[in-house]
Image (cartoon, rainbow, N blue to C red; front, side, top):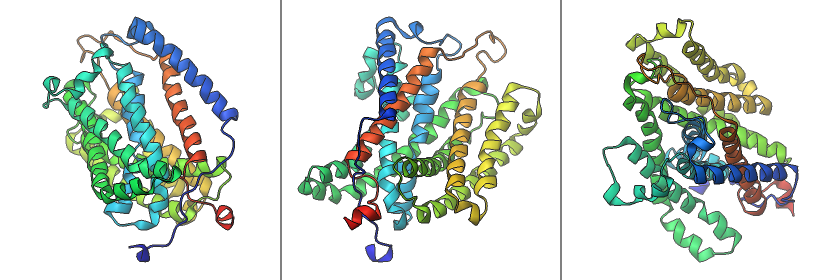
Length: 392
């Protein structure tokens, strides 16, 4: 198989100092997160959040779990290209994308505990006697938990290489095909099931987002988001570490992203037209405004990198990645919060806006990801070795 694809440089630690301005800021934000969580676990959700009976789910579930796990689909999206569609030329992107996914999903799994009223019972999900196999939330919880384990195993060769554990890596490589298969199926299951949770909410969700096809919308946009995050992360890492941008990989990847995005938009607007829900997008309401912000964000990459020459511009690839990430955020925000009616016209008196502590916890979660990314890429073989490193 190697003969069919160009040879790539092996991954190598970037090196450099771990203590700098970025890691210091991340450390402060993480300390604030820990302090807030101590209060939350001692005194309950009401002590630090603005959640209420109308909005039992707020920023932590929507951003830390639903959006966080979608952002973490880079590993799944790139692995699918490399191992399922045999596009071996993208192999150098697998390990960094998997690293971002690893932290995204691990923190999403931990973040669920923050929002549990009786958090001390979280272990029930792993106990068969408490399982409800008919629950969509049960499927999401099981699939995410299993996928976290699978990703740590997929990423384990990075640690084995660092610590010289050749035999362990050899044994793991024998079952890696099975892990890759699981790592493709599990995120497809739970990303679509996150959309099924919208279906379960019934008439409480605005028809612009309430559709039986929303599981497919969530799955397609998770794949698109995965590619968008890879564009964003690759450009940012190249800039931060002053490395050469892998344009020969990112340019065709962006083209694939646009193809999947086009399929999604056809499905999205076809569904709105068939259900007769599109006129709701032209009413003078917040939901209509939110719908168009989301839609324009999804269309933006075509304007930014629609031409081949634009896709050869790193700044435009970065902007397209940001646009698609924002679009994915808006879709999930709209479906779970903006398009959510607390009482379907009967009990509409509830409002919700996240408190400062909620915002700080979410910011702190992203700070953990950034800090962990810096530490691991500097000390472990994740990013492809640079030409200058090879020369040494």
